[in-house]
Each structure stands twice: as C-alpha cells, then as structure tokens.
Image 1 (cartoon, rainbow, N blue to C red):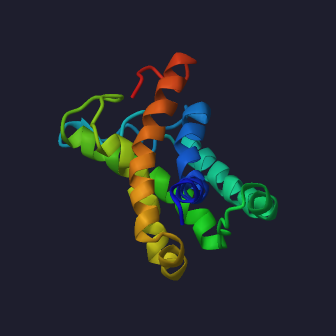
Image 2: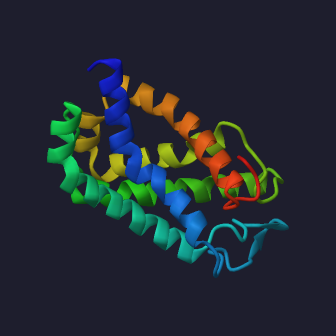
Length: 181
C-alpha cells in the first residue's frame, strides 16, 4: 500500500472509533456514569462521562460502521482503494472501545488530580484509539490482524492525534466544547 492508500484505509477503519466521542459531546448531559461517587476524595469519572453520551456515542459509531459497510462497493470504485468491511463484532467494539478508553483516561486524570477538561497530552489524543483496538483484538483478533498491518498502525497512531487536535479546536470554535483540547 502506498502512503495515500494507507491514509485512506486508516481513516476508514478508524472512523467508527473516531466519531463516538464527538457524538457523545453533542448528545451529552444527563446522569453521570459514576453517579457523583468519589474514590479517595476525588470523583471516579466526573460529570463529563454520562450514560446518555456513552450510549449515543456507541450507537453512532455502530451506525457509522454499518454505513461504511453499505458504502464500501461505491467507495472502492470511487477511491480505487480496497477498504475492508466491518464484521458485526468490530462494528460494536471499535466505538464501544473508544468510549471506554475515554472513561479510562478520565479515571486516570482524576487520580492525577486533574479537573474535568484539563489536558493530558498523549493520553487525550490516543486513549480512545488504543482502547478501541484492544477491545476489538479481544473479540475479533483475526480480523484486526488481517486489517491492521504494521504500516497501517503507524499511520493510525500518527493520524489520530492530528485529527483529535483539529476536531477539538473546531468543536471549541463552534461552541460545542469549553476548551480547545
């Protein structure tokens, strides 16, 4: 695969993991997952991790994967790039893993004494991608290994922080987020 093809495939296979956290921000609010509980005098996750946001984010990611499967023949023809289809388990684990990764990062940030919205460089940009891939590897290992070659993984881990920063700045500028990170 050439560089452009790697970029297209990386974006394609990660889109179900890229979109959920953005959808959760738009649909957020409601009851926090931790119910306001604390652990060692700090919130477990914080008000930013809600049941509604997690459910909507996961469902939107599943919908994106389904839509990509439907659009695949047209995309292959239009792009001239062979993009993979998503098996049902990957359709679920990529977005769910992304949401879980964001919660794990929130938990870690609370343990480090960081407030909601405080940046944690590196973690903020990759938590969701790593968790999405790990959860998918647990239940769809053969598919993950067949799709995520080493060059593709490298592109994913370079592309993801760039996209994360750009989308967060845009969300901030449009008033969807209170901070640009």
